[in-house]
Structure formats: C-alpha cells, structure tokens
Image 1 (cartoon, rainbow, N blue to C red):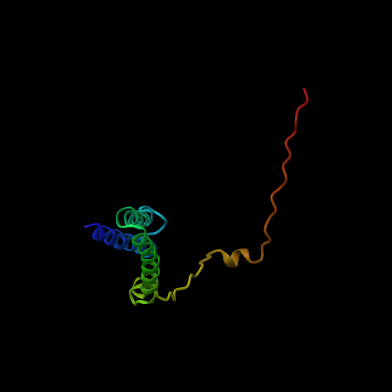
Image 2 (cartoon, rainbow, N blue to C red):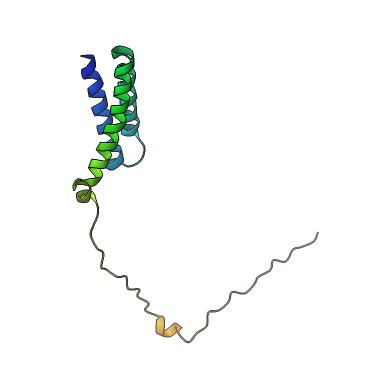
Amino acid sequence: MNIFLVVLLVLAGVALLLAEMFLLPGFGIAGISGFGCLIAAVIVAYIVLGRVAGYITLGACVVLSALAIWGFLRSSALEKMALDTKIDSQVKLADNNLKEREGLEAKKPKKTTKATKKA
C-alpha cells in the first residue's frame, strides 16, 4: 500500500505539471499541486520505505518529469494545440476627406497665456 501511494503521488505530480505547462496558463494551482505531490512522494518514500527508496523516488521524480516533458514536446499533440493558421487579411484605412485636406497645412494651435492678476 505504501509503494502504491508513492507511485500514485509521482504520477499525479507529473500529470499536474504537464497540465500546468501545456494546458493551463500561468503558475497556478495545478503547478503548485504537482510540485506538492512530487515532494510528498519523496517524503513518504523516505519516512515509510527507507533511505534507499527515498533516493530512488527522488531520482524517479526527476527522470519521469523530464521524460514526460520531452515526450510531450516531441509528440504531435502539441502541434494539434498550436495555432498554425495564416492571416492573409489586410487593413485598408478609409479617409473620405483626404483630397480636401491634401493642400491644406495643419494649423498650429495658438498659444494661450493666462493673465494673472496681482492683488
């Protein structure tokens, strides 16, 4: 039962980290929960199963996380999620009064000064 708990925590941690990186934006609840599951798996392995099992679990967490990220990046699932449409549209600015304003210079605003009254 203890080994099952450690394996379950490791798998849940890796799955939550993958979900956080590729499906859910930002660093939120899934990422924190994923790291928490991985840390809990290592702690349970050290306390309940012993020092050697703790080291094995720690190594397995690192290797499985790296392999899961690498495998997901290499799979075609990421290509299906990516936006690959090409935008061919152009923006045409419409200026109805362009011909009327071509010959006119822009008028500069007059500088206004406020007269201050001395008491």
